[in-house]
Amino acid sequence: MARLYVLLFLAQIVLAVCALISCLSAEEGAIRALPRIAWVLIILFFPLLGSIAWFFAGREPGAARQRSAWRVGGGFPERTRPRPVAPDDDPEFLKSVAERSGRDDEELFRRWEDDLRRREDDLRNKEGDPPPRGEDQPESR
Image 1 (tube, rainbow, N blue to C red):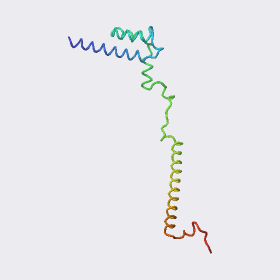
Image 2 (cartoon, helix red, strand yellow):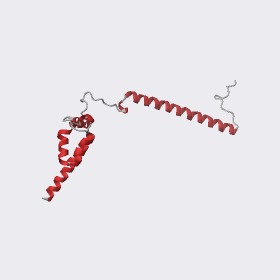
Image 3 (cartoon, rainbow, N blue to C red):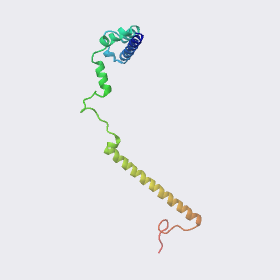
Image 4 (cartoon, rainbow, N blue to C red):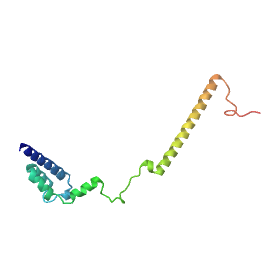
């Protein structure tokens, strides 16, 4: 018999907690009969009766179904629901990535070539060798 009382007590607590969560998360227009603070106090002082009263008289009948439909994903009909396009599905984005990558590669290659020429010129200047014909000096005939 004691186990039954404990079970009923726990059920009452769970019902009161669910009613409090429902009451506190309800939109202002979905609360009927009393202000929100009155419903919270009723649920706290009379957990069993207050919870039952909240679920039957305190909230709009369709409010719970609408909220749960939004949470599950039923807010829009399936055919009109906006679908985000992932970046890897967008051909324009992929094209811009390829162009940007190509420009970056060309710029990096150009910098490497400039650096290589500069280093070769520095080495030639240190050794005292004249620069090769085709690059810095005009060809003399």
